[in-house]
Amino acid sequence: MDAAAGEKDTNIFIRILKAVNWQKNASFIALVFLVVLSSFLSPYFLKPQNLINIMRQVSYTGIIALGMTFVIVTAGIDLSVGSVVAFTGSVVILAMNAYLNVYNNEVFAIAIGFLVGLGVGGLAGAFNALMITRGKIVPFIATLGSMAIFRSLSLFIGNAGEIQSHNELYGSFGMGSFLMIPVPVFFLLGLGFVLNLVLNNTRYGRYLSAVGSNQKVALFSAINVNKIKFIAYTLTGVLVGISAILLGSRFNAVSTSNMGLAFELDAIAAVIIGGTVMAGGRGTIWGTIFGALILGVINNMLNMVGVSPYL
Image (cartoon, rainbow, N blue to C red; front, side, top):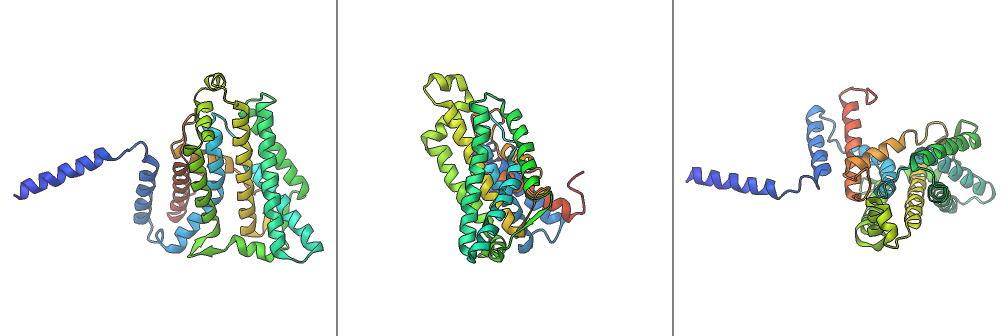
C-alpha cells in the first residue's frame, strides 16, 4: 500500500511538472530560485526593509523597461533612456523651482512637475521616433546619438552639477509608502497592468507584434508601420518621464552627471530576461517586471555577500 501510494504521489508530481509551461514562466521560476538562494546566503535578505528597498530600486528601471518592451517588440531599441531620465529630471526640478519662486504652493508645483515631466519625456521619445521613421536612421544609431545629446543638455542646464529642489513635499512624495509598499512600486504595477492589456488585448498590440515579426508583411497588410513605431518610442519617453519624476523625488535633487547612468542597459536586460524576443515580434509585460526583479535581487544578493556587482 505504501509503495503504491508513493508511486501515485510520484506520478502526480510528474504530471504537475509536465503541466508547467517552463518556457513561458521561466523568468518567474528564476526569480523564485534566486530569492530562495539569497535567503540561504544571507539571513538579512528576507528582512522586510531589505525587500522594500529592492522593490523601490527596481521600480525606476522597471517602469522604463515597460516602454522598452514595446520598442523591442517592434525590433527596435532605445539607448537614450538613461540620458533622458537626467534631462527630464533636471527640467522638472527647474520648473517646480520656478513656480515656487512666484507661487508658494508645493502641491501645485508637484502637479506642474508631473505635467512637465510627461511632456518632456514624450517629446524626447517623439524626437527619437522621428529620426527613425522619417529620417530612416537605424534605431541603434539614432538613439545612441540622442543619448549623447540629452546627457549634454542635462549637463548644460545643471552646470554639470546637482540641481536641488526647493519643494520639501516633493521629497516626501518620493520616499512615501502605503501599507509599507513604496509609492514607485504602485506606479510600476499599475502601469504594468494597463500596458499588459494594451499589448495583449488591443489592435495596437497586435499591430506592434506584426511590425516586429515582419515589417514588409505588415506594410502589405495596410498597417501604418511608422505610426506604430512612433507611438512605441513616444510611450517609452513618457514612461521615462514618470521614472525621472519618481527618481528625482527620492533624492529631492538631480545629479546631471550620474542620474540615469546605464539605465538603458538595465532596462534592456530586464526585457530580454523577462522573455521578450530581441529580434522583435513577441513580448511580455509581466515577464519584464520579473526580469527587473531578477536584476534587483542579484545586485542585492551580491551586496549582501560582499561581492562587487561590477566584477
